[in-house]
Image (cartoon, rainbow, N blue to C red; front, side, top):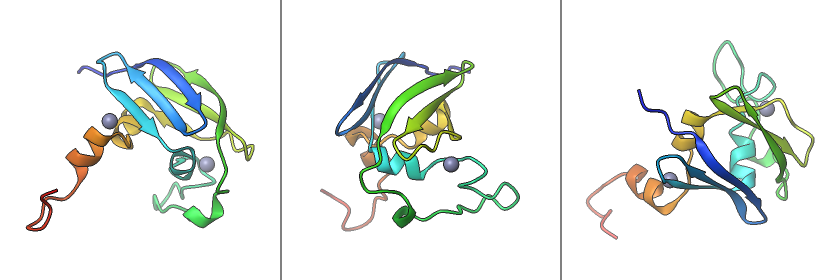
Length: 114
Ligand SMILES: [Zn+2]
Ligand SMILES: [Zn+2]
């Protein structure tokens, strides 16, 4: 199975920009991605329930640095010093906030034509 991997990762003031080996350009808001952290402090491992709410995440949180984990994930150093979260590439693609992915994900309803 083809799994895209990041070719270029930029931590910019407006968000995290990832260019993938398949050419897709992802965008993630810092705070949104921090909120999606999947570590044991943020998500209950037994129930899969998220233990934090968006209001628990500092408004101005941002990724200061990142490191790659094996060949499958990224780990970010957040400005609130939360570093335990690992973001598998598949998750990052799933959470991509670029226009293309937003549109693909948007529910198509009767009034959904934009
Ligand atoms: Zn976490
Ligand atoms: Zn995208």
